[in-house]
Image 1 (cartoon, rainbow, N blue to C red):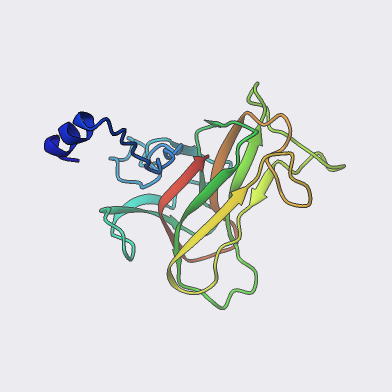
Image 2 (cartoon, rainbow, N blue to C red):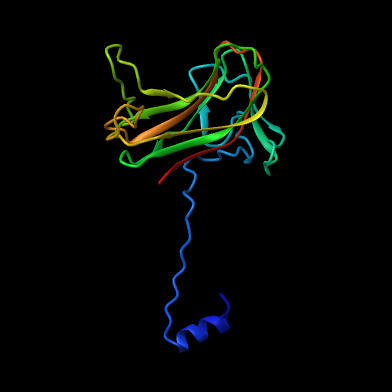
Length: 195
């Protein structure tokens, strides 16, 4: 609004309110993979998984419609990385989204494992079920080739009948890894937000 319009509004006793939707901040450190990699070659804000990190690198490239200059490259065969633990509010929905690029549409079951792992306030993995597992939410990857968008919204624990943020969750960890997939997968512009 111009200074003149603001003065006129004040002179006539008008109150003017602005309403703007505020975008939630990305909780993931360097989810766009634009920072210079650490000395070990891993992206800043990410750590080695239980699997090999030999095939993980940041490479020059831009996803379709993107503006960045780098993407995360994972060469198959059991490679993966995890984000640092991210504090969350268990009573607020969590939105996780990003872009994936793989070139093998013939694989019947997706061997690209992307998901969220839950931790309590002591940073201990939450578990559930008789097996003592269940702290990991797999995020379905869209089928096809080229760059594809994925998104999942995880509601707070009070919602029934859906995968939810488990009771006692205080932290979440994003995991990206390949087990049997022998090819290259690219990731870019990952976002984790809460309303």
